[in-house]
Length: 517
View (cartoon, rainbow, N blue to C red):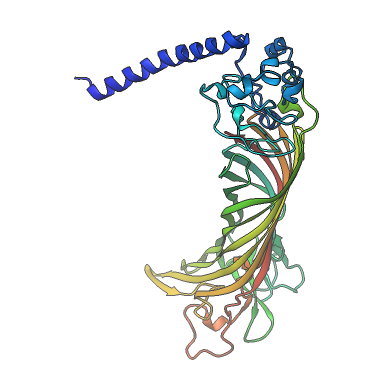
């Protein structure tokens, strides 16, 4: 069976929808009779503040039929004294109905959806009227709407931006080298020796631009947009750098290092004629994301509504300038990883060596972010800017691990420690650092319609103390630590954990689209 309560509810709604227009027309007919005004023409609300801020054009030209010059402007009205309405201006009817002779100051009156029905006891489109000079309302008796000098603000807004940003590069030590065939084994791949070439490393990576996105949204706590909340989240696409090399012995492949025992450059052979064949794979990744929530409040605002517009008020909207303050929590996360996988096979013995190194860093900023923002609007165009300063703590994490798997005569042995990651620098470290994290944003916006806005801008964020994975590689190695470790071990305990800090800059172009409700 159908739900009885739902049936009754929908029946009541239907009756209300039928009866309300009839009641309204009945009231308008009452209004028409003593004052000679056609209720069919009273079909709009003319609020200069809403008109200037891009609200729909409620007023139509039918008001001109009243010979009320003040109502001919779609952006407000003049004094009622000049409106040619004797019933209001000269007779005692205004007192009879509890009205003042002059209903509003210059450009202040806002007829509601029933025209002047409010003083007659008719329903009103709004409940109150602010004294928001110079474009404020002066006569609550006329049922004026609450008015904002620079226009009403949208209660909710959402935006999406494409990011084309550049981030700070990170340095790599020389990781893979080669030499001409015919070189002696002790000289092959050693940096500084004749004919040795660096195949990979010894430079900076992650240069250039790459893409990402940013989502923004907010709510206004009041219709003038003085206070509210906003939130944002952005992410840059994962940056990747990879390298692969393989050889059956020709060409020569080697991994260079500085021998801690001798203090001289040395190399570990991956592929060498008649000795070993092998492959090496290197992968580096980096990813940045951030989130923030702010309470914001405008503390200074001025505007010029401009001259009355003729057709589309939003097209020739106000010129305004505002400054505000914001504060809230900010979270930023930067993750880096670096890994090397090496596999070599002895040509004579068939022994297989699989060597792996891994360096991972994570930087997490959490703090409070105060800031200032400003907007300059001129008709459809707006210039927005803001500066913020995150004050908090960066949690730095470093994880280093290595492993060597050796298969000899069918027997597999796994040992901790690889090549760049030995027991002397393997493990996990965590530190907290006080951090100031500034950010600057500027954008140029264009109001395409009443609700859609496009923008292009520039953003910059600076992070002064982060750990990058590739910068934790110690190129100084004690060969005695390579599995199987010498016993007893002689020489320095290298490689060592570096915990090297660096600065991080992310900046670039933003292209966005925004929707307001």
